[in-house]
Image (cartoon, rainbow, N blue to C red):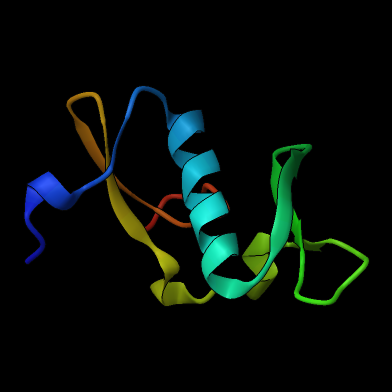
Length: 82
């Protein structure tokens, strides 16, 4: 089990989602993530048209984060993990 001290902490849910999305994009070569109508998009490696993050992320992309006193599991597109 991961040490709680290694768990990222955020002030708001939106900060957590934006950071997780950016980290996922950095790790997978995607660039310029942005949110439009509640959906996160980014440009794939070598691509000129953005794709929805949720269509290309894997089920193992979820991360546990802390928002204030709340601990949640999030995917890079902002959806909650079960």
